[in-house]
Image (cartoon, rainbow, N blue to C red; front, side, top):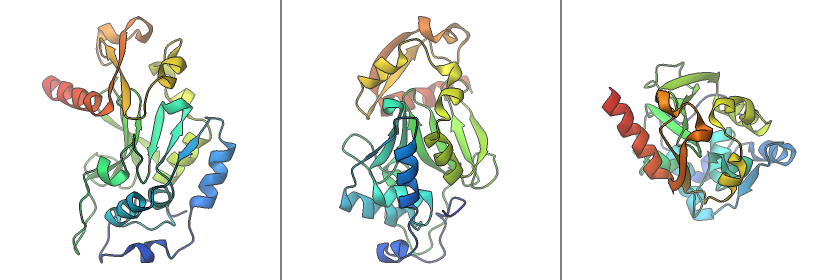
Length: 231
């Protein structure tokens, strides 16, 4: 698979050009089938997939392009983590999540590109220069820190590690007894709101926090607004 973000272009490419390469999807399918994280790929919807790939301007040789073009996204651990792809009825596409419109001929890399979301409102993004990490590195914005932190991985390695079962260790401090049953009851466009928020002293004990299902977009907006209020 291609390494790096790969979504900066010098010249606009159409979908046939972006797919006329060795596709990374067969390798990703193997990783999905072998995943201990109960991974499942959401069905591909042709028009959405083509639009997402065209707006990303990245080839299917990369994990990013392969996900955009070959599936609606990948769901891990019953929906705790959602790797974004071409889009699904309950999960927005990579293009939609990043408000990517029709690419002009002089397309340039965005400051960052959101590539995955979790049920608590956390987001993973590839740094294109705006997050303070190495260019092309995946960073995480969590509800417990309200700040971007580098994982030191490119997108392809991030996808492989999560499919290989890195979730439990990564989220060890953000889970509570019974979390799985609560996540299983959600739609993919929902998340779990915690009160007090885990970024506060009072919200450190997640088992004691008040929890409710809310639209995922509302959850993301809440943490962004809360971070602005805290400066």
